[in-house]
Image 1 (cartoon, rainbow, N blue to C red):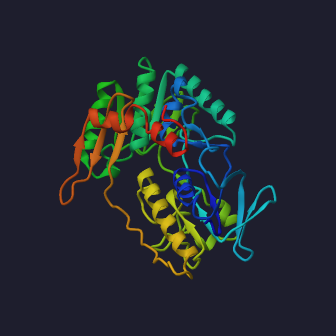
Image 2 (cartoon, helix red, strand yellow):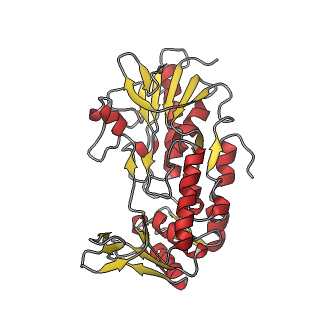
Image 3 (cartoon, rainbow, N blue to C red):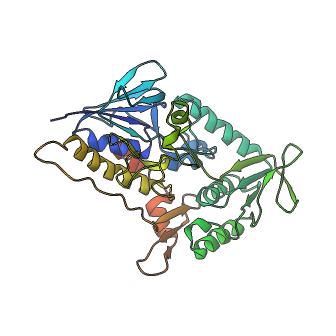
Length: 368
């Protein structure tokens, strides 16, 4: 029996997982401004290689058997009337609302526009620019910057490619220097210039970039892989700025509820539950929130369940592809230093297909 209205705002990894988990529990409405699911993990390759252009786009139409997907933009959460107000004027009543609006990523890992056609045009634009550029600069030596640099190099072996990173080693966020050394060795062996301790900013002249020491780089194309911004401006504009911390993330308690709001949850990149903004963390939060939402809806019944608390995992596995045929995998080892796995594991687990078969199955499609 399905009892209660659940509105999930945001159809990314966490939102899709949560909506699917609750489809048999309540009447679920998933709201997203896009007309398809955007498999962001495949987006860097799609922004470089034309044969991958359509891969990140998976329709929502097979996700829910009982619930529905609404394409639209949420303007605000009316906590008094317990409704989500859309830009069209439509109001969606809720017993529980979940905010899963994720974060905004730099291009090409961004869904530009609101339709698949608009996003495909954006990918085609990046592909064309990469195909004709003589010198391509990637700023940021985290997982995205390393992966994008590798994809560009494999697609354009004749171009000059530079990766500039403000830290002393690549992949420094992993806390494992060996992973960064392996990434740097791969890039340099493929003639990518790696500049460390280089905090870059645009120069005075178009196409020039300057580091903190005053050194300049001239490049006719640049990509900035220097972090993400939570998609919460709409909450501030809608009168819920008090839900946000200084970085714009939603403040949640240990049950992933918005503080002081037992019927409002926030999951994934949008909340402050963990600094590790990676897909496995988003999926784990969605699973826990699904349990807690069921407990909330049945709180007065005979089968009452206690909410569970989210415990952020400080050390999580991380796979960084170097194109489809290589990569590095960092696996935490309890009580010891993380293990570094090489090509075979990285290719099978992620690099070759970028988890596309897995996400297609999550959306109700075949793996191919």
